[in-house]
Image (tube, rainbow, N blue to C red; front, side, top):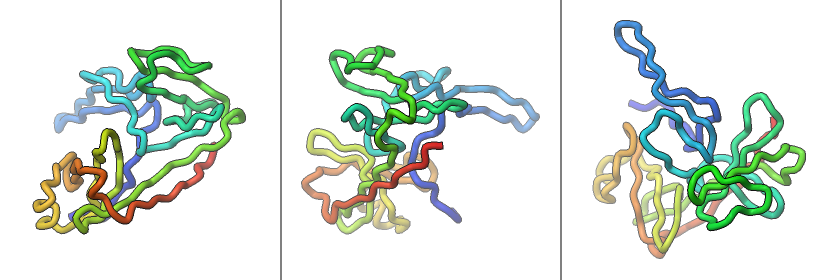
Length: 179
């Protein structure tokens, strides 16, 4: 049974995914190269979720952010723009990257939005086009089954719900340390 629940966030740049065998073998599968590049060695790319992980306010923009290890800079990413924003470079189609000194960033923070859906407590991890992706915060198997929760990893369930059905929507912003 679970003894703790880690908060949903992003992995740091440089994180390695390894397969350790019972025979002592160690195989490197993928390395996280940042928000704009993603996992090198993986089969595809999924952009950072807007409502999960660190964000920064820079030049009036609110963007997904990641601390660049061994430096005092942040990687900032813009997804979906047809043309680059000032100071951004293309990395892949409609994915743009900028690296900014921490001193130039107004704020580094994490936004956590919570709600209820059909009585269940949930965290909003993505929203678009009238839909919301919810991380269910319930541990009642019957309630999770009734809501058709999808197991995204052992013991962690998500659902997609109409935004109009969400109640008690609220959130907190946590300013993050810059070091």
